Image (cartoon, rainbow, N blue to C red; front, side):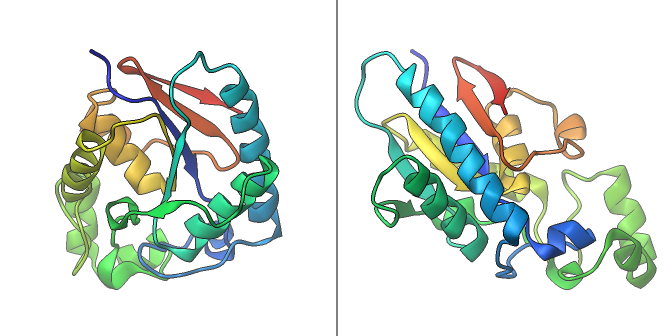
Length: 198
């Protein structure tokens, strides 16, 4: 029997996204483009929700980080739902980049060339210094998904999207680690596959 459908939305853009800085657990707010992307994702979700066949109402859950919560509130506002009526799950938080948070990739490479090279070769299993590996994020996303009982709208991060793709065997780790996860789009995980709507 297929599991619940996930309507997955990456948070809108922040200034650190625009600058190519690793955010991880840092609470960086959405910029103006990010707020527009959140509303766009909500409108896309509204169309997808109208096309759903029967079933129980959608559940809504977000990462605890501010950029995901504000995105969720803008998504719900565009659906004319109470903005703050959603759950928070810490397992949806972004992968930790440890000592590299706030740095660009070039700065991270300069600071820790050996670890950076090792991670480039084995991105799924090698964590940044004092950070988290994608494999660890995959484990928590697998646990999160296994406990779902209803079709769910999840607003979270690029790293957790990649981890969920691998947890659900939609992508291989070596490919997933470098996938671009778009902002302002809705990724639908359903029936063992994945479709992006934008």
